[in-house]
Amino acid sequence: MVATRRHLLAGLGAIGFCAPAIVRAQSGPLLASDFGVVPDLPEDQTAKLQAALMAAADRGLPLMLPAGEILVTGLDFPGIAIEGIAGRTVLTGTGRAFNADGLTIRNVGFRAGRTGADMPALLTLDNCPSARIESCSFRDSPQTGLAITSSTVTVSGCAFAGHGDAAIHALDSRGLVISGNRISDCGNAGIRIWRSESGPDGSIVMQNRIETIDWRSGGNGQNGNGINIFRADEVIVADNHIADCAFSAVRLNTTNNTAVTGNVCLDSGEVAIFSEFAFTGSMIANNIVDGAATGISITNLDSGGQLAVCSGNIVRNITPASRVNPDTNPVGIVAEAETAITGNTVQNVPGGVGIAAGFGPFLRNVLISGNVISAASLGIGVSVVEEAGAVHVADNIISGPFDYAAVGLRWTEIAETDLFANVGLYPHVTVADNVVRPEAKA
Image 1 (cartoon, rainbow, N blue to C red):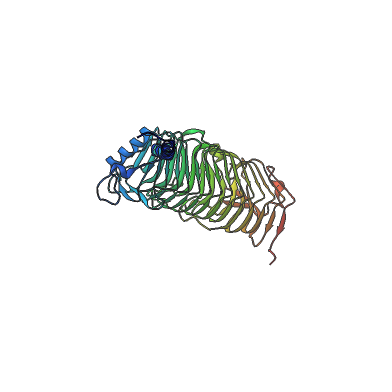
Image 2: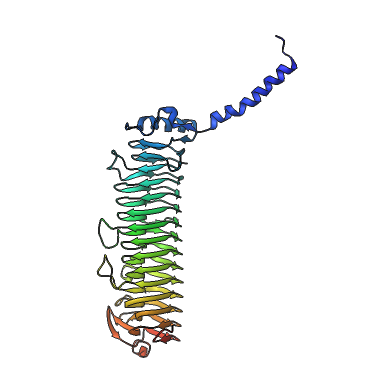
């Protein structure tokens, strides 16, 4: 047959129509089901799913997982995009990624299975320079939900529940972003950001909802915290909602240049926000603390802890005793060295001190200024032992009911019941322009 112009145009049209389909076939995601992965079967699917993952990595393509439960044991994730069906795809077992640059996992559930129970986490990321875990769920690990080591990871919009140890444990990572996650019912911690040695970390932990954190492994503060930063410098902890932690909502240990701002901290068993041991440069501002044995503690000058700002916080409803640590005293805010305590509001500290400066000789250069304190048994308490350093108390409003508006303390004992009237006896203390109202007006 002789080709006519009409035949030629029709052929070209067909080629033009088919070309995009060819491109889609080459660039679209691979389907795990094409490799024999069948969900909701009792058989282990590891070999088939691993083959699908490696094929997608070889071709530089994303991999789609089917809806349903897929039983696996020890998967190795390459640096590709892996996506499930939101709320329906569940990998029952454990997985790991090592040197997986560009890994993205989205809409995948991880749950502990019959195998791999001895693994430290449902998902482990090791030396992954750029990874994203988005809209995933992690449930019921006997240990940790997500473990991150020496990696840069964004974890966002995920749900963590029912883990024996921590929801997220990060070690020696750099520049993590952990945001918008829901964490509940964990045995020892919500989010841990730790380093083997002190150094820059730069992680951001923000807008997470964390609740019901226990301390199953015991101790006096290393467990039971909603967010725990240890030896990791330059970290931001902001705008989180944290409730019902056995010890602290936010606990900083040996940190440098850390910002804790805008968090809502409810019903902490010990100190709600704690900056402790060899810290420097803690900014603790604009947080709400409601319910704790101590509201905010910025202490351990004996270990080198110093240099902080505590400003604009609301601290209220301090309990007479800690439910986990009998050594904790009821205090709204306490600091020891190179700290400005300014513009805070403290209310309802029965049997304790609204704002305290120092503990025994551990006091140096503390400013208590512009705060409002009401219904604290002792409004302001200042250490007056002989070795204590300088403290200035000015422009505060102290409103009753209280036993004493301002006292001098020798450790935990009251040595001076009217510090404002008798301040001349204590050269390291200066006071100015404080307002004392024995009873608050209705």
